[in-house]
Image (cartoon, rainbow, N blue to C red; front, top):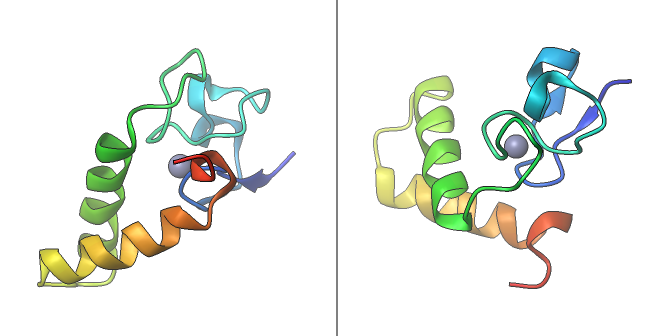
Length: 81
Ligand SMILES: [Zn+2]
């Protein structure tokens, strides 16, 4: 079943995009290892920053990072931090 990564908000349309390639895990493969264990927030943040910078042709890494921090603050996976 397609869903959204609970960590970064990425839309996951196929099983392969889930951690461990199984929809059992609510995270995408960039946010968690193959067993579904979430990576550290810093690791996730940097990966998402890399992604949006290439996808949206953003040049300013500091701005991209700020954007991602705000986004992560609102994601279920990071509510306790
Ligand atoms: Zn994710």
